[in-house]
Length: 173
Image (cartoon, rainbow, N blue to C red; front, side, top):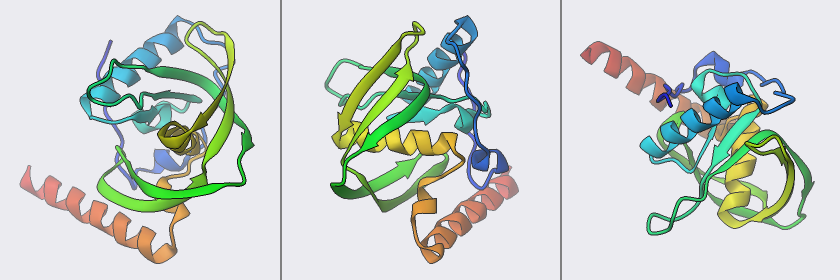
């Protein structure tokens, strides 16, 4: 497994749509495993392939708590089949927008179809943190960041902070 580099906004690749993998083969499984390793090392709960520079419809998620055994989900070509009418607002962050957080409103429950790491078609209903995380990661596959759900003013403030931090980091090197 390889630890991958996480792209940071406003990297242009984060705004591109990912393409379907069609079938989960050894290459996709290696990508999933490397993404999980990268996500765990970054203390994240989800990661989408576009965040590591791979424009494939692959996400990994693990919302188990720190005192619980890992329960990773590997999803290829995930699609949301159904969204509840019930909405919930909660704070979100993103490994591609380090140290930035904002409240985002999303459906509280979703039904998702995907191919697992064994290339088996699966369908799950997710609520709570899992629903929020899966929706967030599927957004990445469409080139959507959580800040795109915010007002233009809030989005601009967050993106300016990231640009400033990047410049300061480059100047320090």
